[in-house]
Image 1: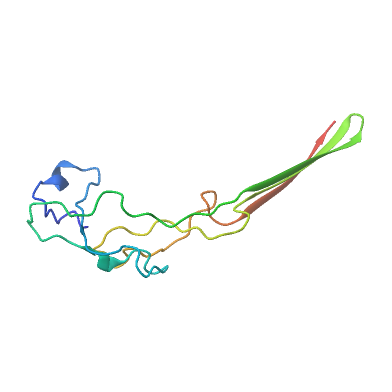
Image 2 (image 1 turned 30 degrees about the horizontal axis):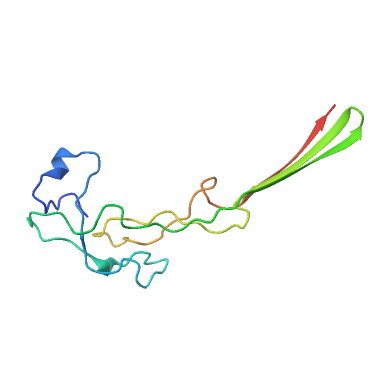
Length: 139
């Protein structure tokens, strides 16, 4: 919701500079007909009338972002070559299944990109698969 729309008449936008915004009214199921281009149903929300003197009916934190599947895998093996010489082989992978995990969608209901999954999470935060192989010699 745009910060300029202070329908609650509480002047909250001026007093709270930490990004506080007014809430919309809930008028439907936010998860109806979910796709990647419409993760949240924009028709499930409505802006309260200007100067309504109340906050919207939607609660704080009612929307849940896209689910994440991230399986990391590691395997190590030590080989004794001689009495005082050993080799250690190690393989580690993040997001071993290479499942695409999306970043949360835009939350401003007045924006045309509201509820659209626009980007994947970055590497190291559930993003693309990465792998590392190492060989270590101890003597």
